[in-house]
Length: 149
Image (tube, rainbow, N blue to C red; front, side, top):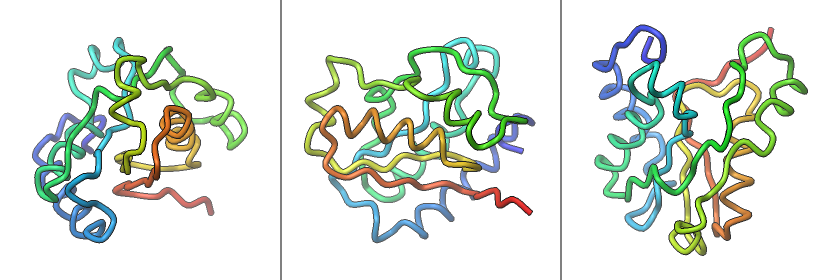
């Protein structure tokens, strides 16, 4: 609904639920980072649903919203229809911390925010980029988890 139907009004309720669930996970020094979209996908969609959630979660929890510390370095195909292995291959190496943001990430506790997690491939690729840049701890907060079968 939030991702494909332009229903931004749902973001507030979703973020409130997520922030309550993650109360013990997010501290005032935590960096809340949305899963980034590639620039053309964000342009065509006009917004990043994970960023809408992450900004509200950070605001509610008193944490720091930092969308600029993680970027998608290349376009990837949609994960829809890909199997587990295909999803991991699709996003492998697709995320990075910009060189001028490494100092912000190094030693930080980071919470990656995504709307829906299916295989975990995307958030694993994001976490790997953040850990490579020196993040102390990386956690994931997703609104929904898709379970097969």
